[in-house]
Image 1 (cartoon, rainbow, N blue to C red):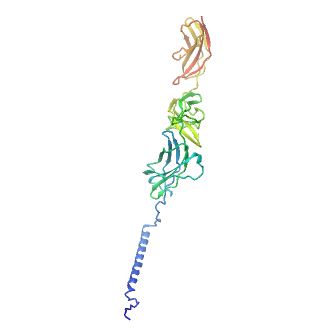
Image 2 (image 1 turned 180 degrees about the horizontal axis):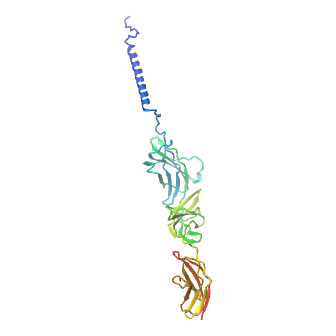
Length: 372
């Protein structure tokens, strides 16, 4: 039989090389294990590797939506998170994903699932310490629609937060601001009055009932503060005022609409100084004496310490009344030296305080004098 037989011993040329290769592999594996053991023992205990995107930023907690009075739309605001889900500082924000849904009001179902469209990416590329809050204006809105929003914080590749709180807002054209805002000092406080608006902000006639909100700035305040709830009548008495202090007021119209308050623009600011409106008392004991050179009037002095004097008024026989003192008289005596035609004349006196502008108190009793 012509052929070659190769024995299967250890010196066989076919078996020997395979054994050597297997030995090398085992040796290499032992060296790798020894290296890894040495690395772990030399550098301390190592934490397990963290998969990309597993430490995500915390979600936004305070997303809010407001109707923009002009040019019309919805303003979204929220604070930028500062920490990750594990409590570590959030050092960088790539941006935010804004989700929006538009639902006709006649088919809106509270509690039903919301079908959001593709998200809009809002780039930030900053630290939360540099960008602490966000404002986004959505002007793509239509009347008769309910708008639903939520946002997600994007830290980086594969690292996006859970959804924020969800906000709902129906959109309607806001009402125009009130007009003719006025303020009057009273003993109880500052009385504000105004005229209702006549149109929506787009110029169309106002065909719905509106309410009002009053805002105020005082010298001790840094910005506008709301000082009233929703008012049904165009008037407000601000009792939280101090004599001699100035305040600035503005009023907005509010349209209640599908559970939301659609607030319009505010009036032009009105600055007013609250005066001590404790009016002077009516002078007492007024008497009139007819003299050759005129009519002498005498009365008792008022008890108030902040008076600048008194004004004297005269009513002629035709019923016309006029003040006959150009400036307040400092004493409780006055002589009317005008040449008067014959007839019956009536006089009364008012005390005047030192406010700016001066305020007159209640009138005294009236006395009459017959001029022959």
